[in-house]
Length: 201
Image (cartoon, rainbow, N blue to C red; front, side, top):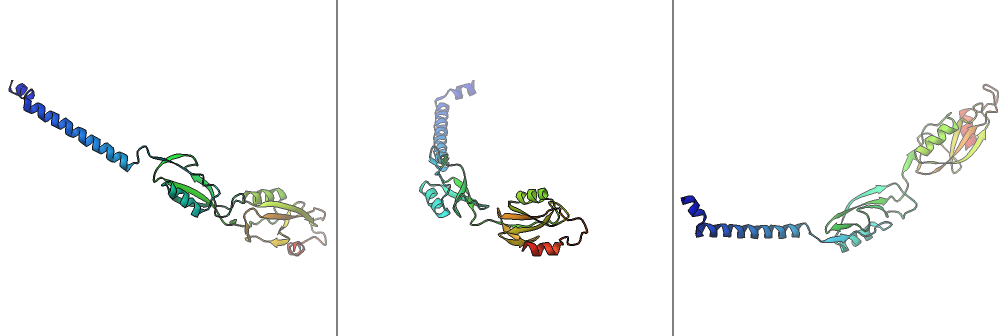
């Protein structure tokens, strides 16, 4: 009876009431603090950065209380100006909170250099597929006297001979010098590798 009487006493009810009020005040204060630290309901629209230079990008983001994140450089693409933004994350028009980092990819100022592989005596199909796979383009096809038809005798770039381990810019156009298959193996006058290089020059 003593415990039950205490529970329903005025003193106990007042303490319970004060505890509820204190809990409510703490909960309200915590929710306000969370709203202020997480920018609750404060969203910014991500601007379109494609084609813009980095300095302009930083200004556009700062105007909207956004931050430029990590910058990744991608292989040169002639569709975009040098050092211009080609991709962004989040995308343009996305709604994000203030202070959000925007990550961008930038167009390099020039093509990267690619090493020329060993294509000597490879077939035309092998040479073309290899060169295309590493980023080159195939230009003109010319033929020279040789017993192996369509075998690679030499490579040219802008009229100059290129050799294994030489480096050219990505997407460069490479001309192929192939054997015409007109000579018999061992026939006098068959073109040697050294002669092929001189002819290609």
